[in-house]
Picture 1 (cartoon, rainbow, N blue to C red):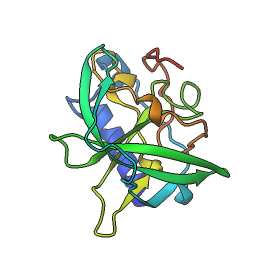
Picture 2 (cartoon, rainbow, N blue to C red):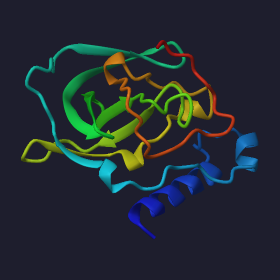
Picture 3 (spheres, rainbow, N blue to C red):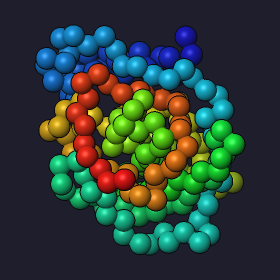
Amino acid sequence: MSELDEFRAEKDEFFREHPQSPLTPEQRSSFGGLKYFPENPDLALRAELITEGVDLRERIVMQTTTGDQQDYHRAGAIEFDIDGERARLTLYASPDMHDLFLPFRDATSGGETYGAGRYVEVDPPDADGRVVVDFNYAYSPSCAYNPNWSCPIPPGENWVTVPIRAGEKTFPGAHQVSVGS
């Protein structure tokens, strides 16, 4: 079993058994596991965290699925190619988080994946200023399962037109959140 397969099995167990699972009791009673894209090594990226030309001090206010707001600031951006197209995504930081936060929407959002977007947690940059962004670990936020959870909606600068077919797929019966296009 790969590290990713083990991670996914543990997540399924958490969703099925743990009191803090985002699933409702009704969802848990019939939960058979989350659906995922097959692991794609090409979508595990080691990329330079670009900070030049990125306003690292600007307060970024992300709306949440419940109408609240959460504050972040940019930590930098990454650029990468996917299916022959160039994409750029911004990573965010906040004082109460160790990891960097990568919320994004892509061409699969609203079809193959949760409509409001998915997230990836990213370790801070290494000594060379690089980060590892493994989209195989991309996940739907808790609000995808239960509307009582409040989740930040990826800002427009993180909406890409390419499909990122890695990570978690749409959960049957997912709570859909309307976001602008």
